[in-house]
Image 1: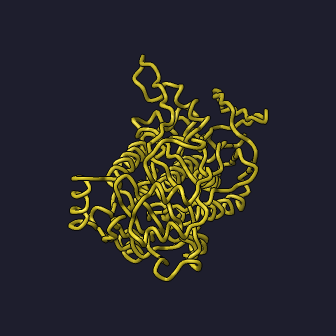
Image 2: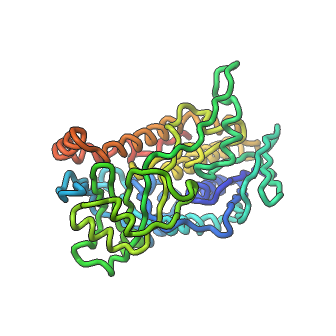
Image 3: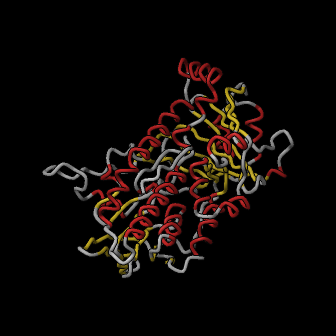
Length: 415
């Protein structure tokens, strides 16, 4: 098989892995379940840690061509409009962390990675191939897809998201547990109690008072709204998160939603926020599901099979690090594979050992981001005394609370 790695899932994490592993000298078969490589119409934020990964892969110019680079992060009260705190981004981010803070359309991010993967002769991309089952063998891994095809590789990395098929294989085994104990029972995805409404609007269609090159987060009791520029600043991405019952397809990112329904749910808010919500004509609904924070390396890998991104550590979007952690996972695996190749390029890669090192080195950082994301959701939606305390703390220590040196200075290099 000449050091062939299988990747299940062709989203941002899977495509990043294809780039990282092929550049480490490995052949890659990437299996994507959809008929084409595409992402839903939503924006994502890329902190300096994620931008650092893309820069290391030589993709800074490609990112510069499609992303926006906000000047600041501003937090406002959703009802009074009061500015609760600000954090300068732009030059401050470059000075402190060596990389900017970027905001980008998910489709643009995937295209940057897809073009990089397509330029690698070691990468083969397969569409309409969803993993059905995984069989680990003494010298490789066999993946049976729903089309009935078998794919053989030396190792498999599952990047197939929250509802991962590959995860079932990893969680069925006893890797990383005390001998004699039963394997842990995998916890199925859980509904968070939060529903996200997503939409976009062209800056050119907005009045001057609503146009922005900043990230703005509006906090209110049981709700928050985040808006920021994407696609070179030409569009504004808007995400409104409210509390409620699960509705629509739990596995869907793009359930239909109406502006009227959102405005009724949001209720009375500051006029500038309401004007922004009314300016978005097409809304999609996304029930936010996740899992509890990781509790050990066994959730990242077993034998010749590993997990990356949401398949291992799905997280709520309240630290804006879901895509970033998937890219960090990919970068780390690429670095470890590169080191294994440098040691003896002719020798087989000890995948079980490599994946165990990856799991041991990544799970605690990913768990910390998951836990911070959950706690942020509680703070964003606070009411009563907690809301008062949050506002007071932000007025005194806004920069300190919003900045995350432990996060933005990453990813840690395990190689």
